[in-house]
Length: 296
Image (cartoon, rainbow, N blue to C red; front, side, top):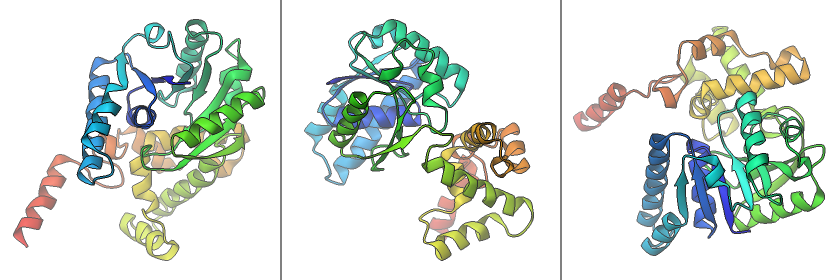
C-alpha cells in the first residue's frame, strides 16, 4: 500500500500528507480550492525547511518528500489509484457523508476509507457506503508531523483485517496507534473537551482571567499549554462542533457548550485561524510584540 489520497489541504490534511509523503508513500492531496492546495504545499515546504535547518532531515529527503505529493481539485481523478483514502475535511457530518458517498463510488473496490474525524461516528459514516467493513477512523493529533498518537477507531462493522493493517501503517509512519471503540469523542476528545469547556466556564463565571486560568494549569498541572490557549490553537469552532456532537450523542448536560464559547464562534472569534480568540494573534499585536523586543 504505497498510494494514499488525502481529502482536504487544511491544517490536518497538509500535516497528514506531509507525514505519509515523508514516509515514502505517494500522496494525492485533494481539495476543491487551488488556493487551499497552494497554501497547504507552502506549509509543508516551510515545515520541511525547518526540519532541514534543525538537521532532522537532509535537503535530498525534503525534495523526495515534496516529489511524493501530487495535487488534485477533482476527487474522482485523485482517488483513481488509491489504496487508502484519509478524509480530513471540515468537522461537519453532512459534508463527510457526502464525501464518503462519492469516495465509495469513485474508489477501487479494495480501497480502505479512513476519516480523521475527531468526534463523528465512524459507524454512521460507514453506513452511507457499500463497504462498511473497510471504513475506519484515523484521528491524527495536531501538529501531525510531530505528535506521535493516532487514535484508531473501529466502526461497528470495521473488519479485523482492516484494523490490523491500519495499525501497521500507523507504525510505518513512526506513530503510536491506539485502538478505541466508536463512541462520541472517542477517548482523546471525550476527556479533553470537557476540560476545555470547564475552563471557558471558569472564565465565563468570572473566577479568573484568561492568563490566570492558563497559568494555573501550566504551573499547577504541568500542562505544556494552558487550556484556553489550546482551545485557540484547535479552533473554537472545532471545539464547539465536537462538544455539540458529544452533547447530542450522550444527551448529558455536562457536555453542553459554554454560552461564551457559542457567542465567540458566532462573532467569528475562532482562535489562531481568525487572528483572535481568547488571545490576540493579529498582525498588529505581533508587530507590537516585536517592537517591545527591540525597545528593551
